[in-house]
Length: 125
Image 1 (cartoon, one colour):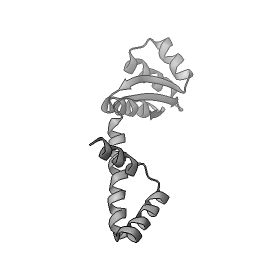
Image 2 (tube, helix red, strand yellow):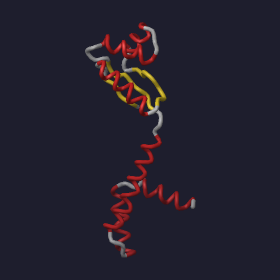
Image 3 (cartoon, one colour):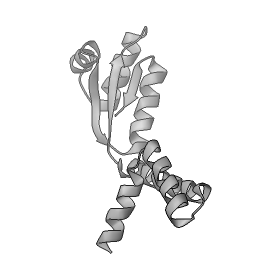
Image 4 (cartoon, one colour):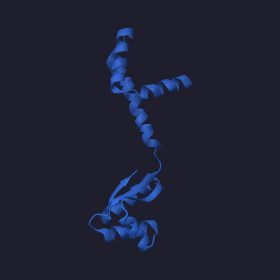
């Protein structure tokens, strides 16, 4: 079973050039048409990419800039993080800065939405 898992991982990590070479080898040496090989190999990277995306369970909310409505962003950071006014202002003034770390996807997107509505430029990492 371990050999099959290693083989599957190798297939998932193939480049486009390597997939084309594999398709040529399969056709010439084994009589397998490249279209069938390309579909089989293309399914592998898609599944691998989905698995990699699912692995990300912890997100950091990063304030890139306060935008034009700095006061509104300071208020939003203050409320979201439970900080004092000075700490929230320092965080906003120090942008780019991490507002919160290790959040679930839903929480991170919710906080991002609140900050963007206040006028901030925010990204999830």
